[in-house]
Image (cartoon, rainbow, N blue to C red; front, side, top):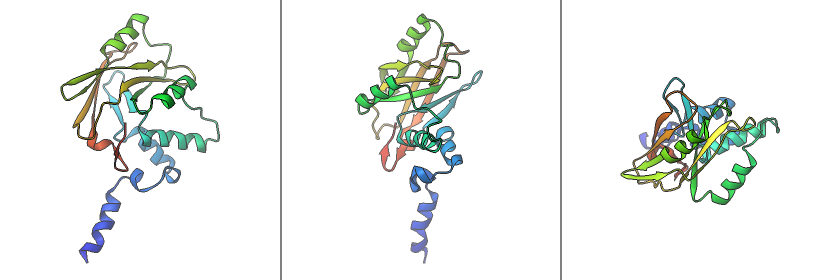
Length: 188
């Protein structure tokens, strides 16, 4: 009898994003993917910065589902960013930071420092940011582009950030690759 229950227990122990398609997610589940999933982290305080892996399939699916349900009331990302992503998806991933005040992103020198000091560490290797998209009033998200060098066998990915225009601009976020698996595939 126990062998009959084992598959059911395994199925029930999986997160909803593994067992249900996005169109069946509740609004609460969509918000959980966008705010409390392995692809999202709140970093530091004063202020707390919400960082998420914008190119991870569950994040993109949750955002697409919100837009679908809003029947066009919610806009998608900046068209320049969307075009870049379409051409480069296999080469890069995007770390995004919600940025409610796009005009407060520091000086040109601060943004240069962000480009120079924001790095991804995998083991002992460091990779510099490959580019960025600044937030706008219509799309208040700072998007940092990193090379897609992470492999499923890597234990962790640490990203050291310099975020201009906020108190304590040096931030660090760490993702465990084993937690970033979605439908059997590493998603970043």
